[in-house]
Image (cartoon, rainbow, N blue to C red; front, side):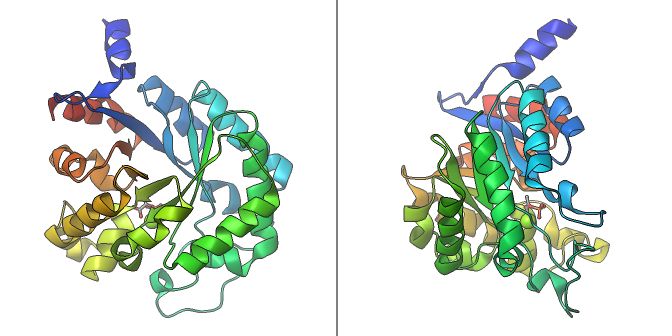
Length: 282
Ligand code: PEP
Ligand code: MG
């Protein structure tokens, strides 16, 4: 029975209309990668690389990063891993790069802004990612992209780090400006990954995690739905659209996301089987 359940979990998720949807897992440790594999994840749709950089006195070396990214890929049996570059900033500060005081850390130097402000550390992370991408299927994506200039700067640094055939390059869409201007980013990426946690907080001006604002930040808000729809239309057939925010794990939201053109969902490892079922019913 257990084997049957696992086989079912690992089977691809296809909608009633015959559209295959990749269901991946969000990962913040090698342990999470094992849980993702046990739950039948098709890939790691989001590797939060912060876990390697926080709570220590110096940045991880290139070799250390390579070892951990490789271990994640191995735990997933060589399935594709989507490495998100460091999403640090004032809300997730690094001891070795103390941030200047900011009144509104969520609107501050975080995500790609932080990486571009610290190019030496960013270059090392990109070098590690390219190295692993030469061995195993890897996607890389940049968090908190706001303008096409930022994305072009990140791509230029990635090119400096070297080539890896098969490396897919994407960006998170989690800032409303990026969602509204999605068409402008299309020529520079292979995929969009919509981060609904931040996209919702920035669209509704309601801090994620603020218990008093739960009604504004949980579920698919119509304004956020409109932005997701817009991203799906801008992407068309040219760029794959994924969702890696918590909304992807909400059964009620799944059919709506698919209708907007989303073709990959990435959720907490334990939710993979449930989301695959939601896809099969959609
Ligand atoms: C998001 O913002 O939806 C997301 C997936 O990224 P994080 O939760 O790590 O900010
Ligand atoms: Mg985010």
